[in-house]
Amino acid sequence: MPEIITKYPDTVLQILRGTPITCAEGKQQNILTTCPKDRFCSSQAGELCVYDVKDMGKALQIQPMDVFFTTEAGIPLLALFLMILLLGIYIGTKLNRK
Image 1 (cartoon, one colour):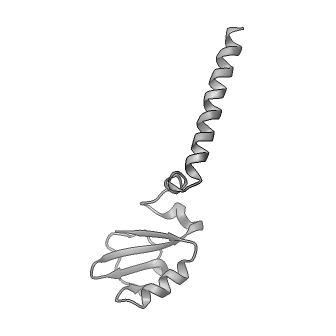
Image 2 (image 1 turned 90 degrees about the vertical axis):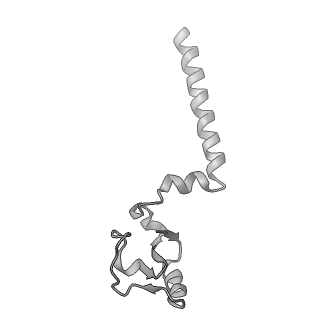
Image 3 (image 1 turned 180 degrees about the horizontal axis):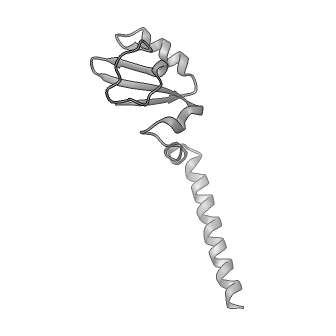
């Protein structure tokens, strides 16, 4: 079942309440059992949980590193990290030879 991470969870929950999806009404949580009850939604099609960005660590399906490496900034940061790592290895081998 899906987990949604958003900067505006209350707005997402309000939008979902305008559909046949039931949110924060104490429905039984069969799959997303760790979802906070006030962020849990249920429909005939399944369950979903709406997390605030600051609560991302509580999500089971999405990890902070998933978001980091799938954002536009993630690729340049990863490339920078790899360049620094390779430079460190190069400098380390040069210093070790002396």
